[in-house]
Length: 141
Length: 118
Image 1 (cartoon, rainbow over the protein chains, first blue to last red):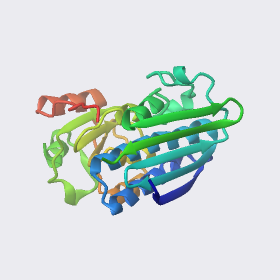
Image 2: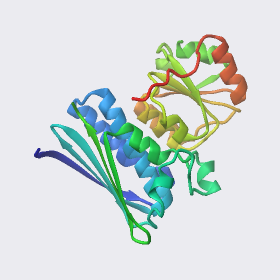
Image 3: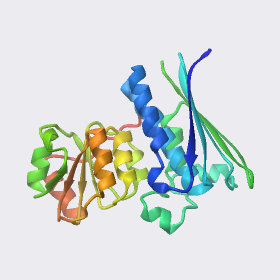
Image 4: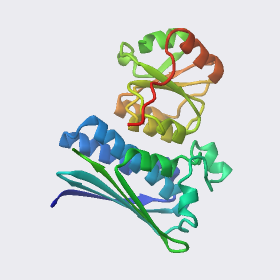
């Protein structure tokens, strides 16, 4: 299916206060496109969790959102430390976040499971010491 | 439950969104961990929290929540208020603690989360 629209964002890793701005913008864009509210909510929650992860674990990265007739694809790429054990990271409640991050309301070990819960497809490509790329898709129909 | 009823029950003050107090909420969530809030979809829910940072507003926005109650006399920052105004989210502040605030709302019929996995 041909790509209809692409949104590209650079996620700043230095400012936790700003984390989530790209997801807020995507939510607005999807609303303007008239997508169903449930689809918009699933895309924006999954992307928001991913964006927060990039800021707290990887020092930021880039986010691409591709919208086709059939699905919304979110690709989050960072050059952070990578994920050593992906199956462990996918377990609810498992987190490597610091107490400082927890005091900010994140690091409950729900980020990656939430991203999987809200999307129809998710893949994690991670190399320790090089970075992580997460691809997620939410089907429109 | 109307947001104005929540305000009265919790003896809360309106930080922003005075014009939206007639809107209804149908479920509630009390947490300081935003990922726990994001774990479940709730329709027109109210979020009770003691956490103060801009991610509280963004989390509520992502979940399509239309009201946030800050407990333990905590007050949101100017930046948070601005974000909430942009998103049409009502902000309330109460001196009651989390447990008590949740209990009062529960007792008056706002019985928790209608949890569903998308």
